[in-house]
Image 1: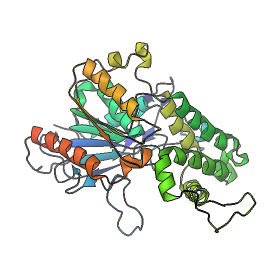
Image 2: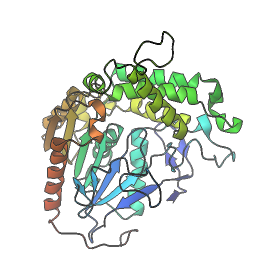
Image 3: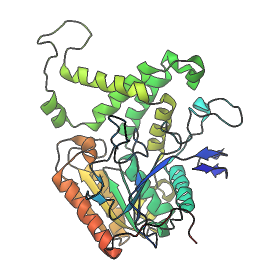
Image 4: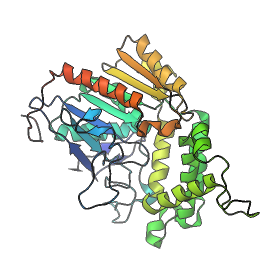
Length: 377
């Protein structure tokens, strides 16, 4: 969907002309009350569920969560996935041409924030004729967007599902992000963000950035169980190649990532992570930041997630309780670290399914009669 009305950004800049790519699943009901927005994390996209016909390995990134009969049941709900601005999966980003120059934006693409994404998503909802979401849901960076929706558009969201997320990054998390960015910025093939014109990709930087990030997504227990100190070739090689299985795994992840992800996008999205802090305008008081929210909340954390630890989810819960908001909290004892929000865990899926059952009954427990998208009459 193309937008020609300028989008003011938190930085003071504006995007004068942009496109958002989105996918929908299920049917919108007659009163347009069953819409659910699913917000994506760092390296995901609008492709939330299902597979593209004729394309192998094209399964949506949350296909285990979203679909007919699944926890977020598309027989009941109309689900929307939106690719955020600055991404490299279709929506306007650094790889696209700047209308003012006719050349790719590159590093000149404006820095965007979680709040900027939410405002863009609201404009898309307006175009689709959806005035209020039954729920906005996301994990990790997507959970930040779900929380931001409840603050920025309190009357347009009935439920906010914040999964494996945080009200702001810790200093340690910001440090990890900066090391990853430095790996990209110092790659000779980066060319100050103008690598498109040089016909190269800063793959070395992207590989290292992904390896750093991936370490933070896994727990120590998970890595120990999967890899331990297993040797790739049975004995030490007394060199600086791959000795251990964990080294092989990380290099594989880095190589794969460098083939499909844009370096400028990585810089932008990690900076959006760093900047998210809804309490900042209230002197660090999260309860004050959430005072005008109207939604009901589901907050989920995972015991071994050391990147966005359960303590950070409890901060959100405590701030909501101070405001007398209705909030359900689940802390899942799972060994998989931060990546647990993407995986199948019967308790986790059961919590989300039960919560959406509640939402469906609040809507009248009636299967939707499809209506056309577009502006409401």
